Image (cartoon, rainbow, N blue to C red):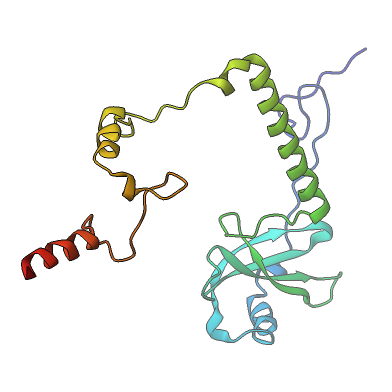
Length: 201
């Protein structure tokens, strides 16, 4: 004969499984703000401790009281004081620390150098494989002419005209144009000297 759980029994679900009762924090710990503040003032100036924020119920009935921090550069962080009370004893401080909240700006998780190096080498190997696969897929891509663009096109006729205007004396023995150290902005110093000689005669 199967038993049906009572509809008014809130501790059992539809399958008859008894749900654990929610843990209730010790009221003495929740009210121990003075004790928590005294512990904080031993490690940090009172000016760095802000208003009470909230609390967290830890394992074994430990309660962590959180206070806002006024330290510059620590938005979203909280001064945290963990308190405990054993049987009829007075609350005692277990730990005091500055911990980040959910919106705090924290450093990324540290990754060992060996792991980062392995990831880098894997990325480099993948890039090489991708380039090789692209070259195999389009072998003629490497032989294509480079597009210089409209502004970079060379006018062969203009280039020939410039060379036609030069005399044999303007070329060195190897066929390259002679550059005069005194030439400025296309003005040939030798021609200026010849003009000066004519004016003197």
